[in-house]
Amino acid sequence: MVWRISNFGILSPIKKIFVKEVIGMENIPKNPPFIIASNHANYLDGFIILKIMYDKFKQKTHYVSHPGRFGRKLPKFIYLKYAGCIPTDVPEEEFFANVKSALKNDKIVGIFPEGRYTKDG
Image (cartoon, rainbow, N blue to C red; front, side, top):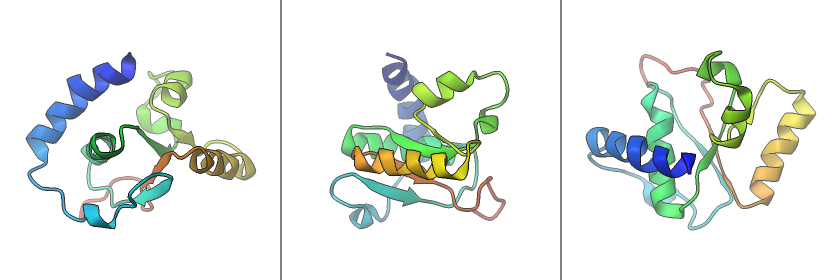
């Protein structure tokens, strides 16, 4: 329910307003599992990729992220359960086990290798 509301109430308008053209979809595998890596120019990047991947594959992207990125007001269980994020604030072995599990279960894993957003994209 939360995902449906987010998808249609938030993600669809963001994509409609900010995305004029998607270039490079031919480079995305035909089916999950896969890892999608992108530059991170602003806070909308993750939402836009999330929507584009959902429109194509009908599943959400599970981002590698630190729960603190969402601020202290969002409880961690919401971050993990509803956003489907893979937390980085766990021991290294657990982190890689979580990524491996997502991929074994045919999920899309998203990562911004630079970490935080950058001024030059």
